[in-house]
Image (cartoon, rainbow, N blue to C red; front, side, top):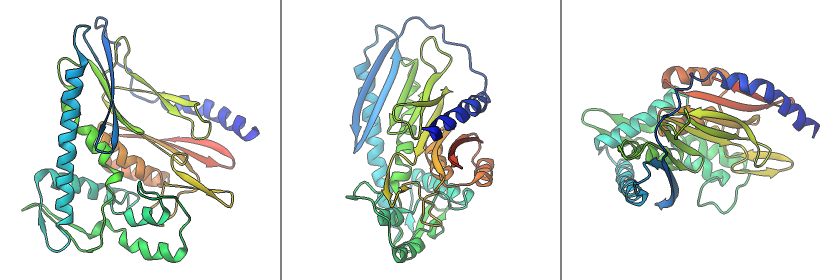
Length: 332
């Protein structure tokens, strides 16, 4: 309890000051009374939450059906991109322009983060049991970690611009689509949200969301940041408009062994979680960027985050780390 009280006092003193550095909030909307619509539907194996506002006389069901239908089609398009990746094992595989753009973005982030984000880390996560198909998570033996780490190698993805093609220089290379498909899918909804019928909207999958415009009579969306240790408690708030927020924490997927917490915040370079990292909150103009940055920032030290943001562009990273029994907030 003493640890908790001391930590909360420290956070209260530091977090508001850090969050106060956000850009000034725009003026609140003066639109007339708006009708709120809430939907939750499955797209593939993902639950997609859709919240949006319209004029009072507008029915939400046709709008929601159009957006969900578009997302399901884009999910099928992503499956086609997956097939292009698999075809690159034996020889260079021609790529669609969309596939080339996605793979280039993944490789850019792998390079910018010095491999703190590596989209080929699936063998590592399988070794730990941190995959959707795993029955349980476990601490892998040192021998197994040594065996799987060479298989985590984004540099084995050889991407050509003209003509667009991909070749996997390691035949056993596996892409971990779970690292980025939520952000990619949410971004596919953004064009649909530009409909004149929609005054504001939120699209969310798990702990990743995009906040479109601002809700009625508010300058921005007020978004609670969950406390990494106290269930159902809020650490602080962010105010977001036309931005995505990705949240990662060592409390989301973890197990205990000999009194130590092992989380899914794995560093693909060492194969181990970063011990002191408790939570990461990342805001960015696009959901895919926020999701990837959150994976990288969960294992990077301060200098690494700063270097990454110089290349990645407009984004803000908040880390909560544990130091000497205290929760310490860091903002970049």
